[in-house]
Length: 184
Ligand SMILES: Nc1nc2c(ncn2[C@@H]2O[C@H](COP(=O)(O)OP(=O)(O)OP(=O)(O)O)[C@@H](O)[C@H]2O)c(=O)[nH]1
Ligand SMILES: [Mg+2]
Image (cartoon, rainbow, N blue to C red; front, top):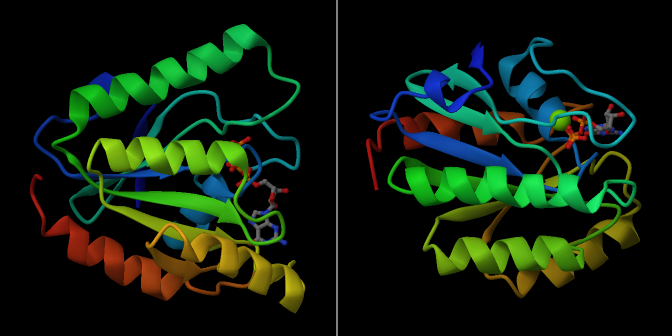
């Protein structure tokens, strides 16, 4: 996997892409690193690190790291900017988005904003997979609760830990499959 840049111009219109979405701190950038098996995305324990789209290419498909949402300390302006960045990309590139990996923290479970986002993705008829993150950190009860609440979305769920490399192989084979899909 290679980093291609942070601007729309770094994304060729004819390529398929997978969007990674989720709350600040859910582990989007860490997941990119786990898939790449190297530290190409910046990771931080402080939420709100990734502030732009970041494009990565992996076997002819782009993975798009997005800024996280739901960070309480963000200003209204920053929140609006987030919505603008995401909306803009989805509106203009919906044909290229072959899938969305919607990350949900296994410890926290789906939040109100996660639910709103998934509803929005559904309204755009985007193919969404729920990626449960940080399962190494969740107790059995937390994991079961999160899974139970996610069931209602009726989506494919992949349980992962970037830290322990759980579920990464499965995601990689999904990405490979999706790279054969040229456009929606
Ligand atoms: N235990 C554990 N910690 C993780 C895992 N994945 C990520 N983290 C930690 O969670 C924190 C946030 O990770 P990031 O990958 O930066 O999260 P992000 O979703 O990219 O955050 P923003 O860029 O702010 O939206 C870091 O301290 C990571 O080390 C995991 O699988 N297990
Ligand atoms: Mg990030």
